[in-house]
Image (tube, rainbow, N blue to C red):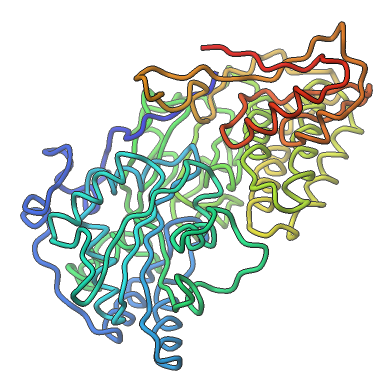
Length: 506
C-alpha cells in the first residue's frame, strides 16, 4: 500500500532554526507570536530588494531554482514599460507526494511567507497578492493570517490579498496552471503560455515563486546579506527545507544549512544504515546510488555535480528490503495518471513509459528495457509543461542507480524482493468524505474469463491501462484518481465483453 506522508510532518532543524524558528513552542505562529520570534520587517525599494536577492543568491525553492533577482528585475522593468501594476503570486500548491515543506510553512508559519510576498508587492507597487494552495489546513491558516493582518476580503488600500484553492494534484503546482486557476479558469497548463514575469495574472507582469522562496526573502530582509550568509555553502548561503521520508522512523521536514552532507542529514533523521539508494528532488528528480549519495551535499551545485536534483527538497531513502524497480514502477504509474491529459507525450507517452518499465520488472527482458528508453526519449521536450521531462528523468535515473537490480530483472526475471510501497504516494483511501470517514478507493479489475483483448479500455484510459505483449490489457498498480474516475467508468461501460470492472476496497 502507499506510504502516504502525514499532512504536516514533524519538524527538525540542524543548527539554529530560521524558517522553523518558534515551531518547537507553538503549533502555529499567529501574528503576535510571529513578530516576537522574527521581529518587525524592514521595507525595501525595488532596487534594494533586487540587490539583496542577488547578494544572497536567492533562487526559487519550488523546483526550477530560477534566480529570484532576475524575476524581480523582469517584472519591474515590464511593469514600467507597459505602465501596468504588477502582481505577486505565491505557489503553495505542493503536488509532489514526497514534499511537505511548503505545507508546514503555510499551516504553521504563514506570516513568514506573507512577509516576503507583501515585501515584494510593496517594492514593485503590485496591486494584488495571491496565495495558491491545495490543502485545507494551508487554506485555513493563510486566510486566518490575512485576517490577522486586516487583509481578509480587503478591496481598498494599496494591495488586495486573496487565497485560491486548487485540486490536490501534481499538475496544480505547475505555474501556468496556478495562474490560470487564479484567473478563474481550469487548473491546467494552457497549450501555449509565456513567462509569468511578462504576462501572468490577468495579463499583468507577475512575480511568481513558491512559498519557501518568499519566506527566505523575508528572512534575508531581516538579517541582511551578511547575516543571511552566516551559514550555508559558498555561493549558496542560507538554509534549505527538506522533506525526508522512506527508510526513516518518521517523515520529517528538516531545515539544513546549505552544503551539509546528504549522509549526515539521513543519519540525524534516523535512516537505516544500509540503503539501496536515495531519491532526490521528488518524482521529477533523480535517483542516486548509495556510493554517490554518500558523497553528495545538499545544495543546487552539490547535488547537480553528483547527478542529483534539489528540486522541491524531497529526499526519500530506499531500504534494502524492497524492490527498487517495483517502487519506481508504482511511482511511474502515478505520474502517468497525474498528467493533465492534454498532449500526446502525457496522454500516451507516460503510460507507455510506465507500462514498459512494469514489463521490465516482470521479467520481459532486454526488449522491454529498450522500450523504456525509447518511451523516455519520446516524451522529453515535447510536453505543454515539464511533467513529461521530469517523469522521464525519474525513470531513467532509476535504471542507472539500480544496475544490479535491473540486471536481475532483465536476465533472471526478478530480484526476489517484494515491492513494499516505501515511496510516498497519495493514500489510496483518499480524502475524508463528507460523512467523516475515508471513502473507498476504486481499482480497475479484469475478469479474465470474459476478456477478449479488444483493447478499447486502453484507448479510453491510457493513463491506467495498456495493451501488453500478449494483446491483453495490463492494469496499473494504482487506485483510480478522482480526476480519472469518469473516464474509468466510461471504459467499464463500453467494454464489449463486459470484462472490465471497478472494485472498491478500504
